[in-house]
Length: 142
Image (cartoon, rainbow, N blue to C red; front, side):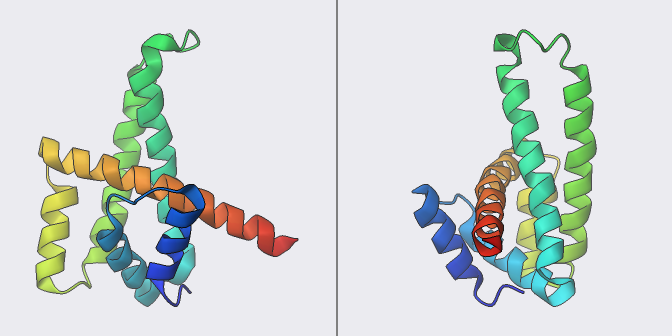
């Protein structure tokens, strides 16, 4: 289990020389995952988020990728995985205090363009966190 989520996120920011977009929300999520099913659940969440970040990148760049003949399968994969991550989010934020739960529902689970933009920013952050977790696994196994 992550003892101090802030340390994990600070270390990832230092490693990649970035500033996370949704750091305070990630801290809430890590703490909620720790209470629910530990770092394994958070790593699964990160895997899906990183995958979605890649899918959105491919979709955005599809006109420049000759191998992409149709974006329909990419859009379907995005829709399926966005639903998966929203389901994960719903199940984990249920235990947050009412104020944070309501804000997270509005910010990430709504049907607005703003909610989708927030999700994409979260996926970008998760992409870095997943890469950093993978880095830690490689360095700890040596």
